[in-house]
Image 1 (cartoon, rainbow, N blue to C red):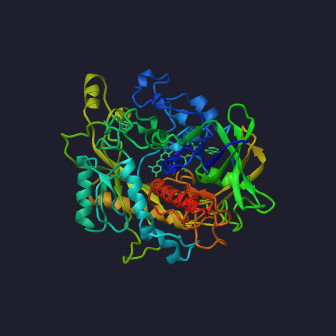
Image 2: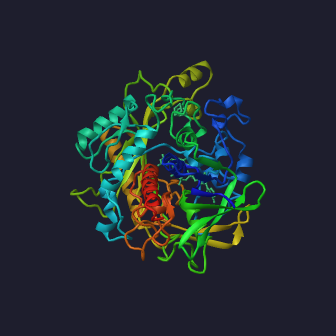
Image 3: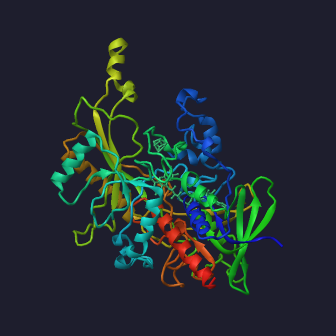
Length: 560
Ligand SMILES: Cc1cc2nc3c(=O)[nH]c(=O)nc-3n(C[C@H](O)[C@H](O)[C@H](O)COP(=O)(O)OP(=O)(O)OC[C@H]3O[C@@H](n4cnc5c(N)ncnc54)[C@H](O)[C@@H]3O)c2cc1C
Ligand code: SF4
């Protein structure tokens, strides 16, 4: 008889790593199925200098264009880190010609936790209550008080550096000491505090990077290229933190090269009984069984698995009696901002490569404050730096004087880059494209997604407000802009199996459990009923840990 595991987790990325840790620590025999290859810290290349790279860091652009025409749109997909992004030919998807969507993905043990930007911001009740107050989509079935202890739990384990601010819209967490602002950033921070006291705040980014040794991992040494890995385990990813803990329990079986095709459904018991897998190397079909299944394959992949698991009882996708599976795709809109030159101490320059920037939390449409013409809000990431070698092409002159001038640091510049909320919209959706399969013969997704007027209004306002703040800080040569990025580019895709109170209008309940099938949990970004404007991964991780706790209890009580 094939072994029946207590739990199967699909995916070993940000959320799969957490599910593996929590379930194994609770004593469950857990099988983690990961589509991609295994990697170890030996794959990390953050300390490889450009002169040791074949193309000196300028990349093999012909190959990148041929193999990864979509992935190369991500800033992190360079000569070092492109190996952590998928091959676009093996992993295709389709879109309508006038609705581009950039689906940026990692397929290896650790998923995109290897290359992520590590920015972590809690949500508040401003976010969890927004759908209800605005009468948009469905109300979140949870509030901040439900998730706050799980934010604590996750933050204590992974280690977050940041500054406490006491802002209701951006709750403080369990922080290690913050990284320092540089003196250019202090100039802008002080200007915001002077012109918008209590309203606009500039702080150092809250990030999943250690500023102190923590849980057996070392403090960061500011080498600065975290998307290439980290041999000192100083930033959080599944390889550095969650999977080793899961392995230590003796309860983990991790199977790379296991591409989950679909789930098996036992109609009599109304339970998922296991998964159908295509072996990534041999392409043979295999099956695995478990008492409970956690989908952590990422927002769009988890939806794809459920849509490919249709049965006569669920003809439009498993656990889809609501008809909402695949719908309400969202991604933060990003790119409204401004740059300028600021006046800061000319005898100082940043030292080291601090792997973090600044953050300006949302200040529009706060509870009890003035209302804008648009809904919701945005926050900024960015920072100050001094111009360096890169300005060579613009610097007049030649010879020894020119070289010397280039060696001296140039002007201080400052940039603010907005990330705005994306409203849920039933008409943004994914479906199975029956005309196309991936390299493992599995039908692919067709993605239909565009931003609406509210998202663009947010970016317009973010651009104007950024220029206004730079002006208040005495900046020169201020350049406001709006990048017209397609959805997907922020790499914060969410929705597709939203949580909600009513099984008629949502796929998952308040515990990330399918309304239709009690032993099925989806805990990646698919579960999100709205996006807020904060980077979402910490919320996925907290929801995953919370759902695991509930599932373990329900199994003990023999409810599932
Ligand atoms: C460059 C970059 C910067 C980012 N910066 C930030 C940031 O600063 N803050 C933030 O909050 N977020 C950030 N993100 C987003 C963040 O990485 C994701 O939100 C997060 O990784 C999602 O976690 P996940 O577990 O859902 O998916 P992933 O981490 O993508 O993991 C999914 C895993 O499932 C596997 N899988 C997929 N399909 C199957 C299948 N059919 N069978 C088996 N396995 C499968 C994949 O191979 C992968 O390993 C960034 C992402 C990138 C790429
Ligand atoms: S900057 Fe810090 S966290 Fe990033 S790779 Fe270097 S040591 Fe690791």
